[in-house]
Amino acid sequence: MTVAIAKQDPAELVDRAIADNRLAHALLIHGQDLAQIEAFAYNLAGKLMEIDASEDLEARLIKHPDVFTLRPSKKSRVISVDDMRELIRNVQHSPQQGLRKVAFVFEVDRMNASAANAFLKTLEEPPLNTNLLLLTTRPHSLLATIRSRCQLFRLPTTHLNFDDPGAMAWLESYTKWLGDIVGGKPGGKQSVPHYVVGLYALVERFSAVVNGMTKAIWKEQSAHLPEDMDDNERIALESRISISIRQDFLSAIETTTENFARDNIEGPNGISEKLVQCIKALESANSLLRLNMKAETMLESYLLQALRIWSAK
Image (cartoon, rainbow, N blue to C red):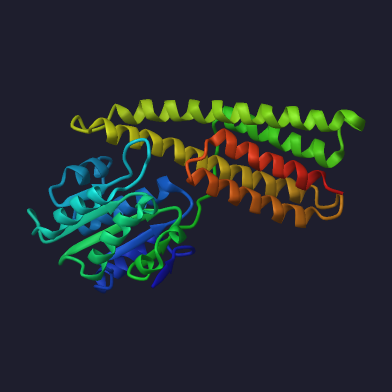
């Protein structure tokens, strides 16, 4: 069953499913915004565990004896079969408080094949009074047999408000770069090297902006982490912050590209077709990023494709 959360308030849909006793044991919560997905999942878990929503909801859930979490760990950022088996053992036990247990599997698409197969058996015979919350921005990377055993909640992408000064300046430079290509500026033989120099300047600045935003957010969040969080968990959390920022940035690039196309719709023929091609190139770049390709290489690949697309006659 797929629940597309669009016009209705997600909280209302959850409340209705819980009240009607129709909430599945396993829920696959997905969308484009990782932070949004996690916030939704924490609120859902709070309702299931009957914990009042508050500023420290996440911390209270993490410390709860009947709440379990599993994230990709180490630099490989993979959910291993050993980690999955530990989670499965934990959810098989009876609740220590109340009547229910909740297990989070963050970035569930990072399971390796062995972990996915081990988890599939748990989905086929779920433990009593347990809700498994699977979080991902790539639901189609999961086995079809796993997706079919989950209740799907698709969260729509919220309106982007990329207000970081460095990010805003980057997007303005990107728009100017596109405008130069479409307008053939500065003209003559100088155009191609001008575009290429601009391309690599954008790549270099992209990394600087993402790193700066990551450090700022990490500095704020790390001050509130549990004291017993180990180094692997900290590495995974900081990596997750960087990934979320890059994803937001890619979404902002997509929105900026669409706005550019609309503003130039009266210009050269083929703007609509080029926009479609450009969005596909962005999606391809996003897939490369998910395969742990370096952000610089991913963006360079996209911008080179964009240069070919927008300069084509």
